[in-house]
Length: 222
Image (cartoon, rainbow, N blue to C red):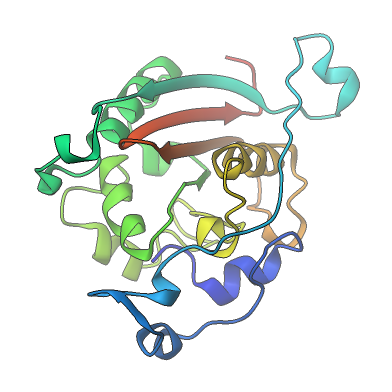
């Protein structure tokens, strides 16, 4: 998993599920489709999200520290769910969108250059695989990367300080919420979930037939 649930969503006053969850509770929750259990998946949340986009010169009048869009990339790789059969390759659309977003933002070592990431991870297992797809670590290194604390609040690349989709899933706005939370980090408004000195943040979206989008926000204009 990414940030321990009890440390993430408990720090977010806007989270849907704000309850400490132990590994034992996850493993003993009802089985949905082996080996995925109830607490491995996101809830259905009643909620909404709005993000205000403003031009240079206007943004500075709205907030003292705007979050600037440094890069954005979208990839749609399949038309139908059945078109994807080789899941060993990972989420190909995320890999491709990530590479383009990094290239446009001049990022070569994402885990070290990014300060925080808000990832659209609707399942616990997604966090392990998709941090590999985004190049935070190498193929097959996700479990060790997380176990070593790299995705914790004080780790190399804090992932989902908000609690992520596992704690809040307002369907239709979930991806935009990742952008909003990334912007909150850059603007320094995260309160208990704030990553200190966050100046470069990544947000992802996911849905449809495995499409992915990646947006990088920064404290400085590109």
